[in-house]
Every structure is written in structure tokens, then in C-alpha cells.
Amino acid sequence: MASRCWRWWGLSAWPRTRLPPAGSTPSFRHHFSTQEKTPQICVVGSGPAGFYTAQHLLKQHPQAHVDIYEKQPVPFGLVRFGVAPDHPEVKSYGAEDHRALEIPGEELPGVFSAWAFVGWYNGLPENQELEPDLSCDTAVILGQGNVALDVARILLTPPEHLERTDITKAALGVLRQSRVKTVWLVGRRGPLQVAFTIKELREMIQLPGARPILDPADFLGLQDKIKEVPRPRKRLTELLFRTATEKPGPEEAVRQASASRAWGLRFFRSPQQVLPSPDGRRAAGVRLAVTRLEGVDEATRAVPTGDIEDLPCGLVLSSIGYKSRPVDPSVPFDSKLGVIPNVEGRVMDVPGLYCSGWVKRGPTGVIATTMTDSFLTGQMLLQDLKAGLLPSGPRPGYAAIQALLSSRGVQPVSFSDWEKLDAEEVARGQGTGKPREKLVDPQEMLRLLGH
Image (tube, rainbow, N blue to C red):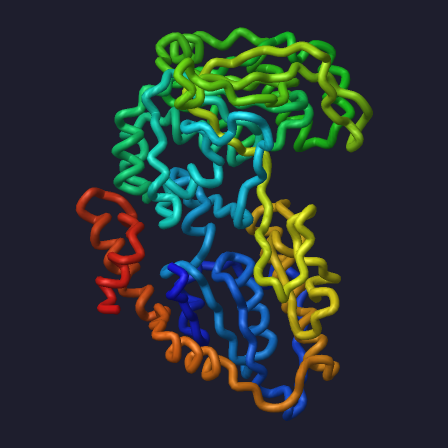
């Protein structure tokens, strides 16, 4: 809600964040002069980047006062909202928005961003009105990264396997009624360029009740090329190659024969249009341009061959990338790259302002990348503080924000408030054997807190 904010103060939050130790990245201890003893530092955003930056600042400068502000009434960003409920250990995270397809028909009912779909089943308040219609037989996911595989897995996993996860009650109810039997994951390039990792691929291949569909023709001439790629990519491509070309063993053959659902990878296809149903009221398919690869290594790109094919479906999910949104008109922003222009986390031409996470470097990496990146941003801030490059003298810190919020009639949600919501979610989940039943309605959260 625009009129509410979540605020965290001091060290009491850290035991609840379950963050990995900071010893995995180089660190150093500063010695600060008297005027640097109690700097007031504001961190906007309570996702991994925000918390890791705050962690580094407090570890290296215990006298610092750090406030974290969050627009949602609950903390932890995409650690809470961006992780597949059946993968609580993964904790990947993303940016604020998805990249538009920019093709005709993407505004049709039945077309969603994978970002919004993930937010829907993870309980992100702004996505609870999504109401995806899963009454169709076939879904198409445009993209071949880990998020695309996450979404495909959730669509095809037997609902009883999701009952003990923290997926929302509403999403689980919709998935129980789903008629989706086939999910296609479409990519512009080939098997050597997929963006998912071997762990997620292996899990999809072994997904209960589902079988993989791979065209052996897509792997012709690939064996020699596999030998030349780095080991992680080699292992991934070899698994794809074996799955596509080798006859499964007796046990696996029986499992696949009994599978009622299927998923497949369509390579060398680029979306051109979302096709409407005869009455024009919803999506009924995707028109794809057949592509071929030109160039080598990092310069490899997909170019159209001139051939077109239509892929019927009733649900289209776009997972072609993510980008950050501008923070404020006063903060520089590169809309093309989706980042704040910066040098090692220092925002260009704005002394005292820093950035970390995907808004700093773009949509790459997972939580471990973000941890290192955020520690480095914190390190730059501390260097500038010690060098006297930041505003000197006493700063009002939260007192100024508190006065502003009070003047506007805004009552922020505190970390102790979050602990009450956390306890409520855990209690609601215990009755059904779930780790928690997420609260998804901000108004209900505020009522529970007496706000």
C-alpha cells in the first residue's frame, strides 16, 4: 500500500534472517574518527541486497544506525515472494518488473508474465488478483531459464506434492482444478544456449507424473561442440542430449509411459504474435518464427529463417528477462539497461547515494552473487565515510522520517509487528502441515496488528 511502509531498526532482526556468514567474502575493519562514530544510513528495500548491505555496514561499523525501508508490509523481498514453494533452499531473487514481449496480442486475457505468476503463487499482494485460467490443455512459456522451469514445474507437479509447502491456499486450490497437461518452453536459440541449470533440469526430467519431450533433430551435430564448452555447460548439454536421443531404461520407460502430463523444449523459435481465439476474447496460441544461429560463442544470435509455425495453447507465460524500475525522478536511471548508473555501487553524480543488487548490475546471478555484490557496495560506502566524502555533522536519521510519516497520518509496520504476522502465519500453517500459511491481504495484516 502506498501509504504504509515497513521499517527495521538495529541488530534485533539479524537472528531471523538466516543469512550465510560474511566470512565467505573479503572484509576489513575500519577505524573511524569521532565525527564518524554514529552515521545515519538508510537502506531502501528489504530483499537480499538490502539486508546484505546492512549486514556488512553493521559488522564493519557497529556504531552505525541503519534503517531498512520496505514498501510491502512484510520484509525479505523475493526471498519470500520470488522462490518456488517446493524449493525453499534456493532463494534466487529478481528485479521489480518483467521485460515486455512487445508483440501483437500480448495484452490478451490468458497472457501473463512469469514474474506475476510466481508472485501469485507465492503470495505477493499485488499479484493476488491475477486469477490465471488453467482450464486449457496446453501452456506455453516463452523463455528457457530457471524461472521458466520453476513455473513449468509448479504447473505440472501433482498438487498433493505441494500441500506441505508454503504455496498460498488460493493458488493451491486453482492448481487442484488445473487441466493443463502439456507445457512447452520456447527459446530463440538452441540447446547450448539454455539459461537453466542442471539441478533444475534433472528435477524436471524426474518430475512425478510427467515426461519430457525433446526432438532429437535439435541435437544433430552437437556432440563435437559439447566437447569444447566449459564443464558446467558440458554436463548440462550432455544430460539434454541423453534425454533426447537415448532410449530410457526399463524402469524409466514404465514411468514415462504412465505419465499423464508432459513438458517439452522448443528450440530455435522466436515469438511473433499471441494468437486470439475465434471470438477474440483470449489467447489461443503463439505464432513463432523459426530461427537459426549466426556467429560464434558470445556473439551467437538467432536470426529468422522466414518460416513460421503456430503453437496452440490457452495460457502464455513470458519469462524472457527482468529489469528494475526507476526509484525516483531524483535518482539517475538507465531505462535501456534497467540499472542505476554507478561505479562500484556509488551512484554517479549523486554523492552519498549507493546501490546494490540487480538495480546495480542488471538481472544476473543468484543470492550468493548478491551477497558479494552488496558487501562490496557497503565497503565503498565505508571507504567514503572514512575519507570524509560524505556529509558531516549530526544527521536526524529516522527521526526526520518519523515526523514526515506522522504528518501524513502514516503508521509504519515495525519489525516487531512483522514478528506478530510471522507467528500468525506459522500458526495457520500448523493445522495443515505447512511451514506457514502466508497472509496475502495487506488490509488483513493491518487489522491483525491493530493499525
